[in-house]
Length: 574
Image 1 (tube, one colour):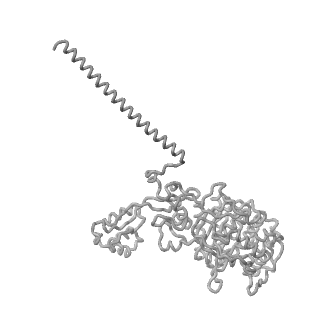
Image 2: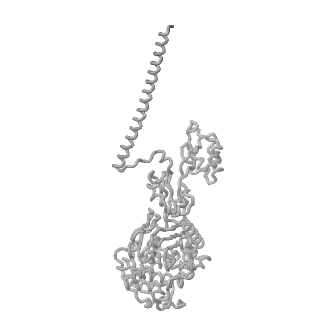
Image 3: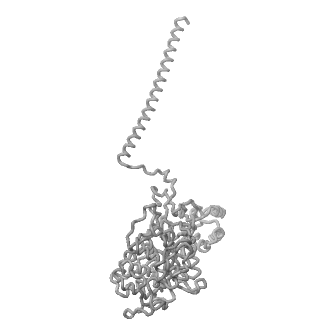
């Protein structure tokens, strides 16, 4: 090869190398350009999207991933954040007759053998019923709640037809505590009876179920109320009991209990029987607890001005063929403080007669006694209301709590208005933030409320409420013992015993209402059936337990001033 040929070859090689390099550079530039265009397009899409959201105010919906991370049903807590109801993963025991591919022979062993094996794991399981279900060949649940360790034991039985699907279960960590407040969740996943029903939409909506709902209930006060209420019910062999603790300034319910209770973790026939709420759904004639309300209405109207004025009290009031009597002769005459201290029907009826039916009826309407109780729960009883026109006798009997039937919640809200300065507010089971309390409506003058605080305190110190007086807590309240109506009239041996109280009376914070349904005279109640001996002691034990929890500490150095009323009550001048 000559020199010219070698030179030409080298030149051609350089040209080819330059061409390859140029082509690679152009390709790289195009790739960079496409990447830049891609980012520009994404940026443009983002800008357009942001602009669209800015104009329309729309928000993006929760993604399926976000929804998957949320609990299937929202949590319910007490006012302090303690869990009352929450969702958690659990196993269920399901019978699948097609598991072996032979519906006619779904089990390896006999239905009776499998049922007995299951009873060894679940002692409360009915063997005959379970065996019949397995023999029927119909698919269905055998048990809804199965612990992991029990699920392993079911696997060991070796029957493929016994399946254990993992489901989401509703769990109530406190068991039966607060059952009538909470209610329960049915098999269809929706709430029943209590706040589970009221809050059903909120608790299942993906937009809200991630945030726990705080109720007004204080779990500590709830536990104390149920404990003391159960103790009192069992001690007197009562057929039932009810109790409520209410904030007098906001209407918040701190505790609410109806006994017997049910367990929302396990709804059976007995549980369904006990779902009836005696606090909000059952109406009663609450007897003498109405007397302070009558006196308050009379003071407010100017009918009672002189607390030393005396009314005859040693003979029945005859209204037509009807006679109004006291349980025993208290004295020849009584003034207003003595009337409440000794709980006289005769004098209360005379005060109501002077007040007139129109004014007493309007007071009861202002206190909500003519309507279902105001609270979120779906079960709310309708009062037995005397009607539009009260004849003279009806006016008198209503004054001491007969001829009108309301729920214990009605009474609690009325007492709150009577002691808080005179303003009625609806009860609520929702936790209220500072400043959220409703304005309510004025029923009594502030001066009337102040006077009633004195009178209620005197009942607890000198009268029928002495067993409710907790040292240092300045309790005030009124007893009420009313015969239950029955066929042909009132049943003498069936009482509803109630004590309505507030504390501390120098600055009321809470109302407590305790009711026992048909208590019996027992050793614990000194063989007495009236509220002074069974309902009042429950309040006397409960207040010292819940007071410190709710910010009220005992103080024996202070009390409400009774100096202007003591001289009117013999033996109370010290």
